[in-house]
Length: 132
Image (cartoon, rainbow, N blue to C red):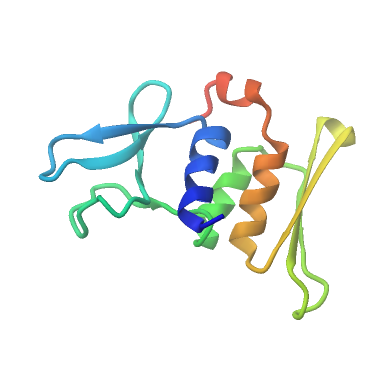
């Protein structure tokens, strides 16, 4: 799966966002909006014009800072990032429900490992609870 596809899945499933178009730009800019319709981030989409964005692009699969924001949607944790050997992939562990559920993902980069673990840990009720 390419980063752009992973970014979209995380935006929709974990963050609870939906695609929304901002027609103030020519051509229109494709954004992510929260459940109230408020623009949250620019969609990582090749159709978006460059250099005119008033929001930062949402690229958690390729950007560590944005991936950490995804982890923060799970609250204070517990979640853990591990890398035991620089020749091994990163491993991210998200623990939910006071240890009753554990979700692991490994990837060659930290942002991808975070995104994959977040998708595994996601529950449909999370986005219904109003995550922004």
